[in-house]
Image (tube, rainbow, N blue to C red; front, top):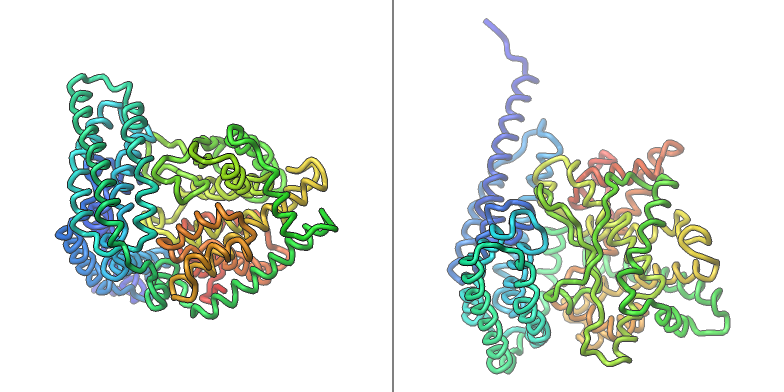
Length: 575
């Protein structure tokens, strides 16, 4: 008679639990996550979704809610045992939080009922994800695009049925974005498939694309004539929903008044640092006048993308020479103009291939140039956001060692869940953290990113101005959505406290109406800085900045709470 040792039994039970969890997670991604978000499937590199488009009919939204609730029960029943692997145990938390967040979005926040831009931008994104990367021959991708374009009129019809008393600002943003989206389908989409060979496919595409263009023009007319006059809704999500969203998306349960207190302290610290550096540069000028001088020191719009490309050599060289972190690849991102449907609410962004994309692995550094319709004084105000300091700060944030380097580490993430689900406090927190970390480590000193002491100070001012922008987002997001700040007060706050131009303040406030928790930049940065300090205390003289960064990036991009437990071995507070 053989005896089974208790530890062996526990191990077997733990393995059995992990197998059940992995099976449930795979089915969740296939049956819910990508099934209801097929454009995201294409972006991830799962090309079985390439012919499908998001369906926002009320019937389909109700079906998604039912599917989410069914999987919620399934994962809640999968309780990990004491021996469960840390990664799998925390992956379960990530999946459950994703389910709770999506339900909150669909049932409580209800953008499908409020945001006209969601529908037209989904059309553009559905096409763009098939255009931007050549993961299959042109004819194959065109075939998928035709299949998607056939579903776009139904998506725009769903908008007409669903949209009920939206916020005025949301409808205005849709009207602002739509002409660019129409031009995108008229010019960019046909150009992207100019090398397709099959004549019958091209003829069919001409029909479906014309139908989409006509549908979008009709949609724009309908929005202006019908939806805009009855757009009197409220964009604010309220205190309770805001707190739930933070808990589900970022695993942050700090009360909102405490979060405001933390950010006000950081904002004041950054203002004082900015004012001090400004005084060193221009002793006789008010710091706000130095903001204006800093803003005026920018490349010409037609040289902006070259200015970003020119930063890469110096940043990569500094990172390697100073052992900041490991850069896993020598391939660089491609700098290009921001796609039309993203231009109203973003100045720059990094578009990396999905973690499971195997054929077309290019990454794109998107830069939004001034709109050709702008007057010269508006162009000047807009270009203040791309001054000598913020160009460096943005290149650090988007590329080296920010988003692009974090993407290069994705293959080393410990699980499929960690490659697919993450938190903005990690992704944006990391990129924002690197802006300050690089200058603190010596980049931007004369001979290392700056030609002289004066330029060095301008780089620090650019970093601090970007930090103040994120501080302002933090406060504006909470205060606008909890009813303590109006739209106009938010614009003024970005200018006065965030040291931003009026043009930037408008773009940022518009974004905040539909991205309430965009405090995740500063929130994540502060969490990472606290983690670094706690690691230093624990490791003492053995602490290595390079090892800290590599170990951080190795985790994938879950909430910092999970990263802390993995790296520190405890569940101490993240803030």
